[in-house]
Image 1 (cartoon, rainbow, N blue to C red):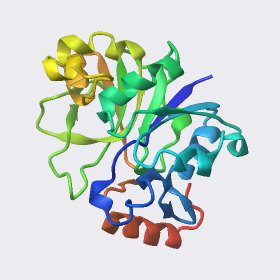
Image 2: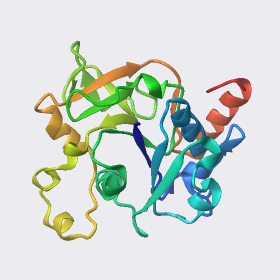
Image 3: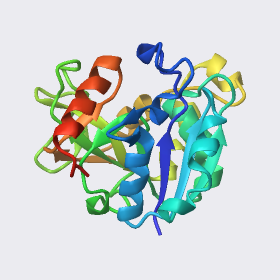
Amino acid sequence: MRHALIFAAGLGERMRPLTERTPKPLLPVGGKPLIVWQLEKLAAAGVHYVVINTAHLAEQFPDTLGDGARWGLRIRYAYEGPTPLETGGGMLNALPLLGPEPFLALSGDVWCDADFSALPLAPAGLAQLLMVDNPAHHPHGDFALDAQGLLHDAGTRKLTYSGIGVFHPALLRDWRTVIDDDAVARSTPPRFKLAPLLRAAMAHDQVSGSHHRGRWTDVGTPLRLAQLQAELRGHPDAV
């Protein structure tokens, strides 16, 4: 059965003062912590094993979520240390817990109504990303999706990466070749972003994508958290 990774190690600096005592994924919205919306959707999609990356106020995650049994999940925690390892370093740090098969990964600070069960169990190449329309705070987007379903770093009509995707562990196999930085290579554990690896894979047509036209929010600021709260209050049946 599919495994999943939730990135929840960020410092939440743009969310201060809300995140001074609470990690961003544990902030309540719609009557429950943001990350619980994700856990419920993962369980509904048939996921039974979830790894959660932690750093900032890490102890609050097991205290709040436990072992995941209440959702029919088995949760493991991958502690990154006091300084988050970024998305690439965080994924690399979690691989020993995730195993050798492709996995679903999602940012702990997004809310989305996409059906996770509709995502492939494995990408055609090294990754498949769920893309969304560009929000007002990110008008230029991230990657261009072509008619064949492949993603490219360059293009005239870019979409925004939702923070949700399916990844093959092999994406990180040659990370040292892509992340050509001596300081990163010497750090233990290494700290680097995932985007350069995705761009390198795109150059070889190894990253596909799909366009989600439903509801999605990057809960990155107190204002966007308040807007999502108001939206969910007006739609109590949201899933």
